[in-house]
Length: 493
Ligand SMILES: Cc1cc2nc3c(=O)[nH]c(=O)nc-3n(C[C@H](O)[C@H](O)[C@H](O)COP(=O)(O)OP(=O)(O)OC[C@H]3O[C@@H](n4cnc5c(N)ncnc54)[C@H](O)[C@@H]3O)c2cc1C
Picture 1: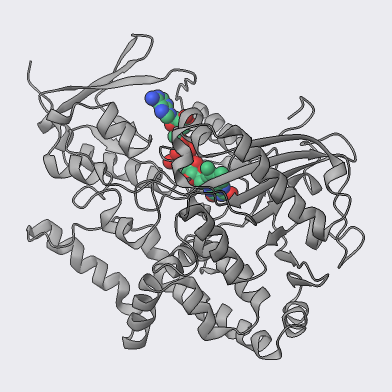
Picture 2 (picture 1 turned 90 degrees about the horizontal axis):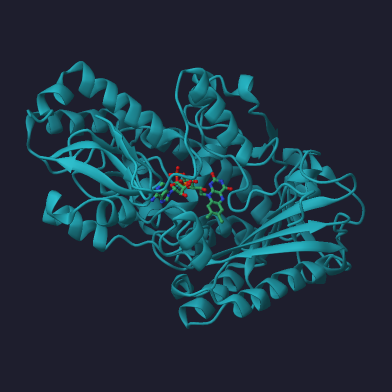
């Protein structure tokens, strides 16, 4: 990308960061500002489109142009999901208890969990069970009959996931993402584009931390987490510099934290085994573009903030998404990848020169094995095909491209520390969620090393720029300090 364009390489939209974090850290004072996202626009190869934006009446009319039944069902779907989000939402900001443990303290935490779920009646329990176990394709087929609505709604079930819409458990992935959209405000923030790009969120967090006295160092890769007699003593940087600390919070991928930065002999075998079998695939490819004019869609010519300022979805049906996944399972990049496309410069003029724009295309899938090697030529051909799909619904798009950046699983792993190319440090599947994230017994943000905590995307509340694991870690450290646990565990020299 040229120097005149500002593009966040990977993530692109804020979703489920709790308002409490934004408020407590006074992020607005440090430049955090969100431009709300304007719904979804799905242009179709046959020249029509589905628009899930605007007023309820407009959304209803757009869906009804494909199926009157689906238009009515969508209203009920949003109510149903909203109710579920209100029930499950608080769980996102809960500390997962050690399910199965018989220790009195752990039993109490398990009871607390049950109490939190008291709003669930018998039917609700059934709904949640189905949500956790079903495929998004099966769930949507129970509600809707037309391909375009099923396609658009299926995307959030497979985003960042090494699973097609017909895979069990993808209904849960959809729920994780929708909680931010539909919850009652306890965990939901606004879906939208941060002014200055996603990097501006990090900048605001950094400024907030510094205003509270923190010192932030970047370009200082850690080589090792230092441990003495079961207690953390600091970290050693790759440069050889040693930093001493009583408390260390690791937010790196769990394979980096536990298998590279620590000595396995300092860890229980079951933890090591759990991290070794941790699934971290997704086959995601990010395509970023700089363009000299906005795309003009055949089905809706001219500028429309609800189209250009929303998310443009290329996923015409569940079948098409599944096909893209099956291509990748068979070992080849998808012939027709699905894409979630945003143009944040429509609102945020700091990102590109006047009249020009930056385009973020989140796409899937290439084989997850692409994490092992760059596969540059195949990724370039894959990006051509994504761009070709936009060209088919917005003629002239290809000619508007000035720069492009294609980031596949190998670069995600080697440049960004996303081992295996998974966008969330580990698949967001039911076998890796809540008390299992990242391993049973350590889903409470602690580790077996005294003073060493974990707060990355592979802990509960993670998967997205949520800030929730960080909040939990801070609470946990405060609790351990209060109860004197940290002092009791300090090794005597
Ligand atoms: C293509 C893509 C698109 C996404 N889109 C969105 C989106 O639109 N919205 C959203 O909410 N989420 C999105 N996500 C997910 C989101 O980016 C992650 O869930 C989130 O960044 C996790 O934050 P984290 O702090 O846990 O981990 P990270 O952001 O991965 O931070 C971990 C940091 O550790 C650093 N690191 C690695 N090794 C070392 C070492 N040895 N020493 C020191 N530092 C090290 C890494 O460089 C990295 O900066 C996307 C992810 C990807 C890949």
